[in-house]
Length: 450
Image (cartoon, rainbow, N blue to C red):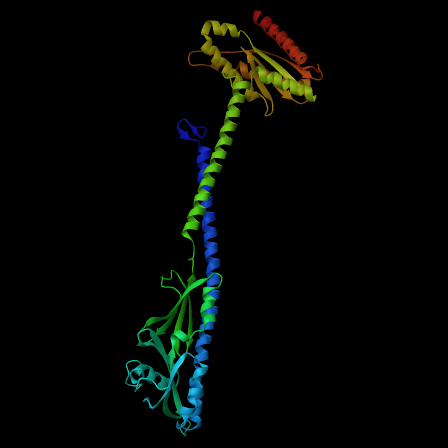
């Protein structure tokens, strides 16, 4: 498979896949956290609005006691005839099932009449209202207590409103309580309850009342039986009682299935992209290897004769100037015959390295075959510059070559030709450079004879 090289997954694929998976993880985490933050902000707004609606529903039911308290104060505690007045208030507030007048905390009148087992005869002695009665009297504040379950399925709140008559005393004289029994199931209107059900996003909620004496929260209303995970909590106070509204999105803060699907999609996307990257990398490597086999000399890693001819044709087609240096080693056949071809190959490799070190970046070196090398210097160059390059090459090649089994000095003959100065035809330029090289070789032989 193209992704596997020598039994292992190629390195670029590993790196790409790892980076993509890590990036995908951070992207999913960021998107997930952003969504939850946005959802949390929405739920906070919904919760505060709903708490306001619940407070409004409570406040709408409670002022009846204040009206009756005003009447008691106006009559200086004389409640005779109230049986004809108070019943008129009750239909206006459907959640109130009974109003109790309790001078000094003891029952006197009920509106409407109710069975005795559902009425608290003495507010100071009842386990339900004793501590709240003392609290309301001492602090001169109304207190909303409960819920109580006089019937199995009918939770009730009790609002105790202390009444003080106007006297010469600065604080006034305590008369007793005006107490309202409030049915929780009818306390909140349907619009308030529907607000949470049809909000955007739809929310599950639980409304609790906090009892400071028992240090616990009592559930009064909800639209779900499930546990609320990480709810948004809004707390508010009504008549010295503390309330808490717990809200979460109905579909939860996040969808496990949606997160799983997104993760699977991103995972396979990472796999596909990694495969494509691997394909491109292996294709590039394959092309480079093919080019190396086609245009590179396997012994010296220089370009070969095919590449040399191809480049010269391109230069001629584009009318580009260049200089060719032709190089041939002296007496190389003697080295092969006396020391063997392995030694000859080592000499060729060393000479190729010396040639590469003597030319500039952008200049091109070729091995045409045997001990013949050429160099292309792109661009226009004067003769002095080319001769300097040739001298540098000769000096470098002539330096003693040290092999494992021998030390020797190799020399080379070089010639050059320039395009277009010598010719515009690349074949002719090559012939001229080759001719000058052989001229240099004859000169070298003459010096050896001398």
